[in-house]
Image (cartoon, rainbow, N blue to C red; front, side, top):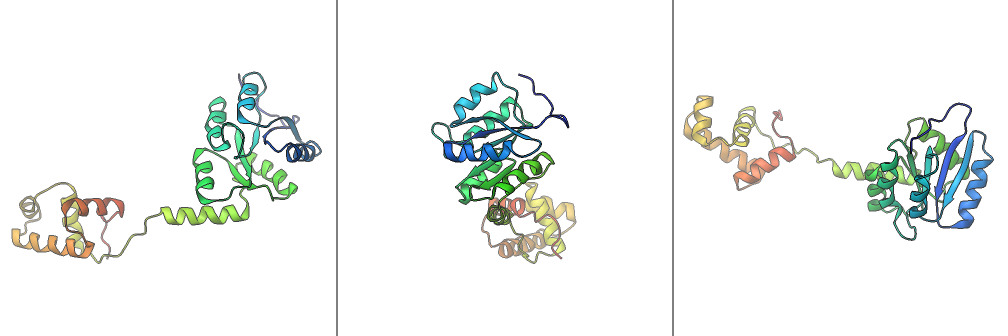
Length: 224
């Protein structure tokens, strides 16, 4: 089914996938009483929402719970995106552990809110995501920053000299000590000494370990 682009005169079309009927109805009431927004459909599980996607006008935003009967919200993200990748999915859940947050964002969620968020925050987040933002609960935002700081491999200052860095580049290329010596117009003994120093500074014992560390920590540029 083709999507219909929302116009300035048409309200934002919002679907909810939430198995707590009381919470679902309460939030739908808030959305429907907000100018420019309309909660057109709601479901207690992903499977029923998928069926509706086959016949109904696609929503602009889906507020999606994670702990659902049947397919989890995390697994449902990609399926919803397969109908139309431009659909914005905002997770609205009680789960705030690192793995769940990371998995949801990696699957393509546009935002991540906790259910203790105020109703005004949820409404504002719908506007924010349509404006190109990525609404996050404050605690979730802090977790995301922590996750990305852990993912970034910190470059260690191993104290490689310019010559050692140059030789490291040749090692990574798979060249032998003699080939390196010939290309850099150095003696075999000098190259061998530099390589021993490289191994010592990088705290490795094999060529494979040298190559692996050089790639993972981007040691190809001089550290001086």
